[in-house]
Image (tube, rainbow, N blue to C red; front, side):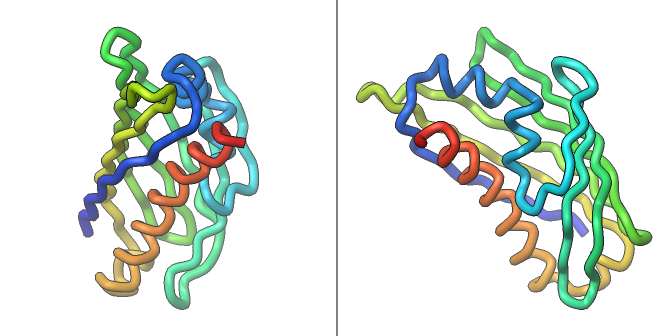
Length: 148
């Protein structure tokens, strides 16, 4: 099942601070909702374990994550793959860091996920709602941590 989302967060921080945050795998990793553990591999790679609950299917997903920053464009791609309890997910997300002109920064984001296995079999509306909540919460967490 393929899922696509996009959104925007206004962050009460300057462009440089937002850029430094969204390109730091240790900081991004802890913005994942229901994160259990983050294992930093290097400056662009980390593994994460997250709790997942979609309908009756509940458990931990182990994810391999890679940040692909383009400093010249203030754009970062995030590749995530992994799974758990017989299900698999591949996610590609992207974010553009844009100055708002008032000292704040806009984070324009989008993501595409491909889900296979029992989680995908739960059903379109349940999975769609949960996946949208998770990706939206990740970028909301980025905003909240930077605005604190």
